[in-house]
Image 1 (cartoon, rainbow, N blue to C red):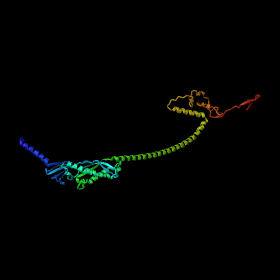
Image 2: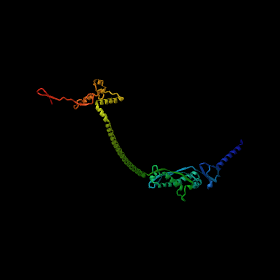
Image 3: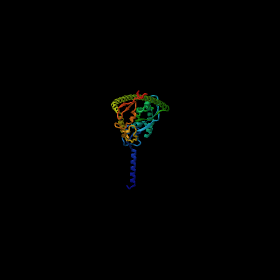
Image 4: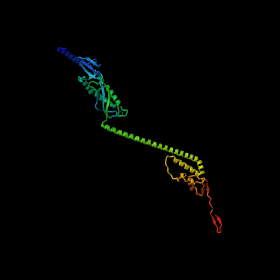
Amino acid sequence: MKNPSVRFLVGAAVVVAVLSMYLFVDTVRFNEQAVVTTFGQATQSNVRSEPGPFIKIPIINTVTKYDTRARVVRTLSVTQQTADSRPLIVQAFCFWRVNDPLKFFQAFSNAGPRAANHYDRAENEVLRDSLRAALSEVGQYRMNELFSPGNSAIPALEESILAALRTEGPDDADSRSSLEDRGIEILFVGISKVLLPQSTTETVFERMQANRAARVSSLEARGRSEADAIIAKARADAERIRQFALARAAEIKSRGDMEAQQWLAQLKENPRLAVFLRNMELIKDVTAKRITLVLSDDAPGLGVLSPSTGARLQPGDIPGVSWLDNMFDQVGGTEVARGRGDVVPMQVEPESSVDPGGEETPR
C-alpha cells in the first residue's frame, strides 16, 4: 500500500463505487411512496410502497417520491346562503394525503419534475376549488340550526362537506373527475370561521335583543304571578295558623281557669297567707339567678326580710303582709279580722240625741 499508484487506484474505486450507488441505488423512506418511471411512463408495477433501497437506471428511470403524511389546505372566506336565505361568510380547511401515487403522478406530473410542484398544483387548482364548491352545503341548513347553542349543526355541515369532497371534484375542461381518481384522499374537513355580514349582524342583534326583551318580560310576568301566589298562600297559612293558635290559647286559658278555681277557692280562705306564699315564690325566683339585687326591705313582697318584722308580729299574724291592713281596713263598712281571712261587718254605734229633759233618745 506504499505504492502511490495502488493508493490512487483504490481511491478511484471507492469514488466510482460511491457514485455508482448514488446513481444506481435509491431509497424509499417509511413515510414515502415512489413512482419509478421509464422514459416518463409508469404502471402500477412501478410504484414502490415498501420502505428500503432499490435499483434504478440513470437517465432511463426517474423517481418521484410522495410524502404520505397528512397535509392541510385552507380556503379563503366565501359567502354562502343558508336555507332561509341568510348570507354567511364561511372559511374552511381540510386534511388530505396522497393515497394513490400513480394516479397522483399521472394527474399532476405536468406541473414540474419535483413532488413539491405536484403538491402546489393539487392544492391551488383542485383542492381549494373543490372545498370552495363543497361549501355550498351550507344551503342545506338554516341560520338558527347552525347557531343553536348546545346543538349546533356545524358538525353535520362538516360531514356534508367531507362527503361532497369524496364524491366529486371541480369541473375540468374535459370531464368531471373525483379527487379519488386523482389519487387524493380527504381525511378531515373543518369549519374554521363563520362570520355574519355587517347588515346581517345588525339585524341579528336587533332580533336577539327583541327576543331577549320578550323573554325577560315573560319571566318577569311569571315571577310576579308566582310571587303573588306564594304571598297569598303564605297569608292564608298565617291566618289559619293564627286562628288555630287563638283557638288553642282560648282552650288552654279556659282549662287553666277551670283548674285554677280550686286553688283560688283555697287562697280566698286566707288572702294574707296567699300573699305570703307569693312573696316567697318571688324571693325564690329572684335569688335563683346569678345576680346581685339591692332592694329596700319595705318594697312590696320583701317585707318578710325586714329585721323589725318579727318584732311587730302579733299572735296569729303572718309576716310581710301588714300592708294589707291599710288596704282592707275600713273599706265599704267592713274590716278584716287580724290573722284571718274572714270579713265581718263593722259595729257602728247609733247616734243619739239629748232631749231637753236630759234623756237620750235613739234616732
